[in-house]
Image 1 (cartoon, rainbow, N blue to C red):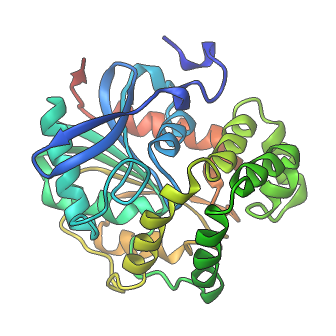
Image 2: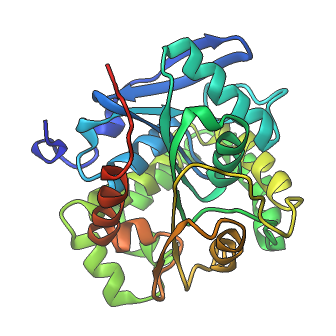
Length: 304
């Protein structure tokens, strides 16, 4: 069934469940049937943003079995003991064991990148392919303004009515919210007017303020971990890799993509000229086409 028969964002409405694995509980949402795709969200995320990632980049999301966990420290997945990318990768493998899934394509955005790479390296037999979108792959210089913002957000998240008000403001002024991520006003307007990119981007922006208090521990952990990653990307990945990154990314600079290409010369690079951190929305159609071609070449067994 083509997911375009449903309103954009329909996938993200799927409710999560708590799955007990050998390494601890994981909150996860699943949708669709077919080859399995493990969708890993970025900072301030959760399972819902993993579903949005999948719907945004996959040509037909309902033709895949999308597995979207909340990474440790986000929403319903506890963070204790799974703080570093390697431990998170092992938790994904334990989740797949519990779900009875042998192999997956891993799709990751932004701060989901390190654990996706760790999964491909630590569990090579289970990784059929890797799609990295605006992903962090080496040490990230997290600006002090971002570090200072997190304590303030923790305070605001505890004030009655404030998160709901911020979500309401985001819905009421989508252009203002989107301009924080898209510098070009015309591109921003075109993206919001796109019949799928617009609703999906607005949904992502609004999701941040739902249960924001339960998104902050994972975000703080990401900030701490990303700032101490090695300066050189790790190699040793056998799975096919597609790297999608904007040359104008102001959050995760483009050198995260080029440094990964240095150690994975067989990887494919889709460099989006002047694309920013939200290139998955501003260039949705081109990215879907490239991801579709990449997935078509992979031998991924269907998963019921």
